[in-house]
Image (cartoon, rainbow, N blue to C red; front, side, top):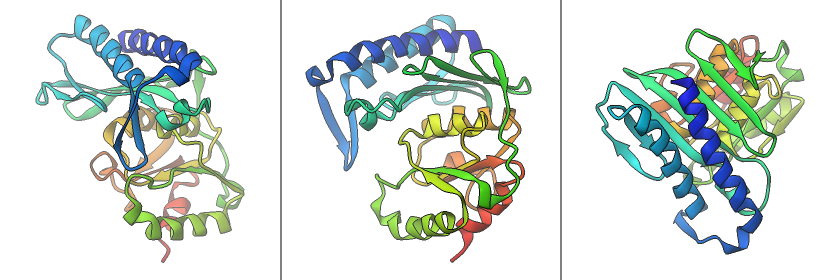
Length: 256
């Protein structure tokens, strides 16, 4: 199943890379405020689903652009064909393909492909996390003051901005740096491989988080919601960090 997901991700990555050379020819639609979609998103998702459906016709699919198909299936693929669309449309090379497989509600397989760096992040439940077939682990940073923390602004849900700005203030005052690259699935993959020590964001969807969350857990990191519980896929609020910083980052986010 992981190999099939990799095949699907690479097919989508090829579509995205070809389109990146002709950005001025793309048709772009605004889904909602600050949230865009192009025909590349649709073409990449269709390519992913066609590969997966050919191999597993009985599986269900949850895609950012296509919604649910076979919602009650035992196996559910959770797909973001192009995470970081706004970056992509501006020629900013920080975006990725994200594919996760859930079995009876439990994350089972994960693929995040960065087509710009040709970096392939993969994980299977209980089997570890890998970058281009090399084992990866979350960072060893043990003091929150030394931590480099990633985040994402609540650009779709601006009513959350006051709450978020307090969190940003707390983290900025405490940690060594805060970064906002603009593609949550890739940010989470970077926590898994130690490029970021932690990450938090609110207002995300399942397809933004699913693959990255499994990568982090298989790399020895921790993932939760803002209460430290396991409801992040439902709430859209995620905190992730290496095992030594998770509790400290959570405390910062909970400070009033």
